[in-house]
Structures are given as C-alpha cells and as structure tokens.
Length: 267
Image 1 (tube, rainbow, N blue to C red):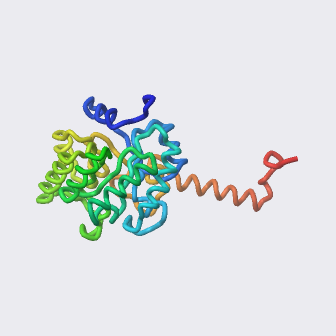
Image 2 (image 1 turned 30 degrees about the vertical axis):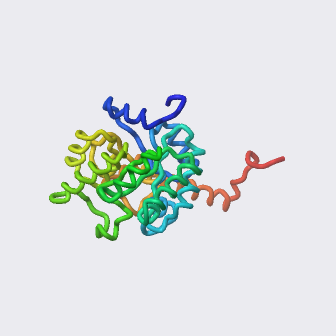
Image 3 (image 1 turned 45 degrees about the horizontal axis):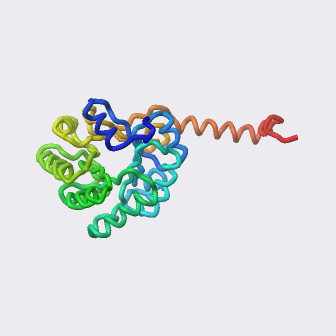
C-alpha cells in the first residue's frame, strides 16, 4: 500500500490496468486488522452485521448509531484500507436532506472513505448530491437486502426482462457519480456486459468472475457461519469447527486439572 493507503484514485487505476480488487465485509477491530495485514484493498462495514454479528433475521433493524460504532472499530484496525460504510435502512430514504445529514455524520465521525447506498434510478439524485459534497459513493444493485420484502425473499435479480432494469439502474447511478457499484446475485453474463462497458468499478457478490473485484463477508470466508451457505460463498477454512475444538480442549483441561499449569501460573 502507498503512504496514503488505498484511495478512489488507486482503485480506479487498478480497474484501468485490469487488476482485480479485493473487498471483505467485516465489523470489528481484530478482523479488520487481519484483513489489512493480509493486504485487502477495501473493507465494507456492511449492515449485514445485523444478521451476522447481532443474530437478527434481516438487516432492516440496523441503525446509523450502530454503523458508526462498528466503523470506528474497523478503522482503528485497518488505518490504510479503503473503508466503505453501508447506510442502513431508512437512513437515506426519507428525504435527501436527512440522507445528506446521515451520510455526512458517518464520514465525519468514523474516518471512513465512502458510503454505500442501495438502489438504482431512485437514488441517483441523492448520489449526485453526495458526490457534489465531496462524499465518495458506492452503489449497490441487483439483489438489495434492504428491499428483501419487496423482492419477495433472497433470489437472483437480472434474468430475462429484469436485465434491462439492472442495466438502467447501473447507468443511472454511474452517471450520478458512483465510482464503484456492488452487483449482488446477478447473472454472470449480465455482470460481464456491465463491467466491460462501465467507467465505475464493479464488485461482485454472487455475480460471477467477470467483475472488477469480489467481496465476501469475513465470517463466511473463514467458516464461522455454518447455518447458511449461499451458492456464491467459498469457505477458505472451517473456522467454526476449529474454534469448537479449541473450546472443547479448554473445557477438558479445566475439568481435568490440566489448565492452568505451572506455565500459566504466577509464583
């Protein structure tokens, strides 16, 4: 990483040079620190923390205060990574004025580099206003978790007649100034077409291999989430199994009088 860390400029340069961009979504100091040490480009503090970190059924109850809290922790762990913050449900939909206030607060209080807004044409004006204020914006189209009830549950978005809408949404938010757009659960050929014709960076999650970069949730990547495994998730280690085994060994050693030993005891 450069002395100034990862920037919008350096990310766009990677796209122009055909170099893939890496992103992980996480919510705490320790995992963010690991991501930076490994050399990740971007960290998304996703509102998925509601489900993964808090155990909720959807992302909808997450608040701006909670996003600020978690982003501060992530920034302390990854001072050189490019930090993007999900704006939670109803933090930007009520009015443009309220949205500008909430987005400005998040950037000001957390030290994040950009905000992420879900939606297409309906949020283009907001994106334009934010970019005009100097706040970098990441878009998010395809399957948008905050619209789960309207979409009728988790599903692929962009097949058949929906493909035209996905294209139009991408163009609208790109023209409004979004420098990066997350494509979620979009057919790979549509994602390829969009990526090849875009100025903005495309980040895929369940959108195939042709996007400019990829994102996974940290807890999925390291295998801590066992109950749900979407098709697009790859577990690089079975973390939950490893952690359970460590905890069981601790229980056995305490119950058997093995821990603490002389090594772990003060004289």
